[in-house]
Length: 237
Image: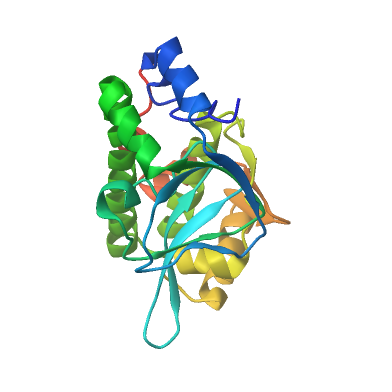
């Protein structure tokens, strides 16, 4: 099932069997993309939304000097551009970090789903509000935490999100990002990120190498990150 990770760990149990069936059967096409491929460009007309099935996707913005800031990271089960349904265009770019598979939904199909299945429509809305909650947390991370806290928070968040969709045990997970991507997401230079990673590794907190994160001391990681998972709105159970 291509939609099996949608809202997994976040109230997926509230979807009825009929809603799950229609979400799956309404997929317009299944597309694959290589790594480092732009899916949506800033200002382009958006006529479909994509559910990430496999791989990692980022949102990013470029400064006038050519510097890049990652403003979101998507994991399997996320809709990566559902905002485009009501807005018709995005104010940022969306790109793959790795090779990806997505399930594509034409906006005409989403329109029908929202009308015919209002509860499913509310859960689709909920998924976009989750993005907003994560954006607020990323602003907090960049504005209030030091370098160690920023990277620790990033690892804590992505680790939990992957655990929620069955892709991590909470202590070890694949994160096929380049160190420069991590630095961009955390608002620091590549050199500074390298220094922080070395300190976290030598401190026995977390290590990041070969596209894999290994958490050695989860409590310490969360403490450094000031991490409170409530903004991810996990299901009570």
